[in-house]
Image (cartoon, rainbow, N blue to C red; front, top):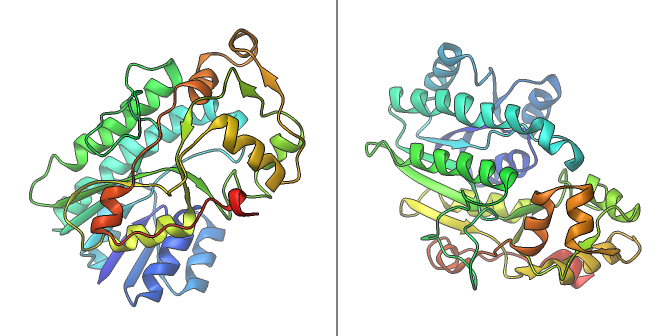
Length: 302
């Protein structure tokens, strides 16, 4: 199968390209950077050096690839989570404007199927694990709500064109190589510096996914029924359980505890939501329709 991957040199893009090539697909990887192009060439992919904001060049590159499937993994996230708020507008612009160019190019080129990166950790708050019928938390705290609105727009766009099969992959929090939660990543360093406290009771539930398992599920989504899939592992855990285990995994001290008032005064409302209100996701559908078999969360087995 001929596949065009946007965001091909990112944390999910690299293992995804490797998995697609391993399965024998012809992959064109889109990137803007010299290092990204070199990585893709070494992996064996064809490189499309083009900006998502250059609509004519993007459409030309997509047509040249003769892709049957487009996979949109476009992000502009910072190297460190402390810069997330500042990076937010640029990330949204890339996903909405740049991704919009990619989507329209796919329609113009007659692409059969479009896979869209989505989110399983901005789901509407509630009891139990959320399935794919749940909407996103557009009424949450300001930063969370803004992200939820962005992902809602992405999903709405995806399913707006019935002539192209749409698959939304609601990934959990990525961990593994080149992510914040790798032992060499930014969050591991924060934990070692005791900069990742547990807020309140830490009852917010996080759903995780290793980037290599996310890549395998994405490859499986090339042929699954169209629709939305939660791509998360079997270990959705509240903060008060996963964060101390993560700290041990990366050689950090036990995380400190602060109350919600202390958090509000120092870091604002959004981190409180992440720590106390976040809702985990169910992977039942992905297991049934993608033959999805994720690994156990690594810091539970170390």
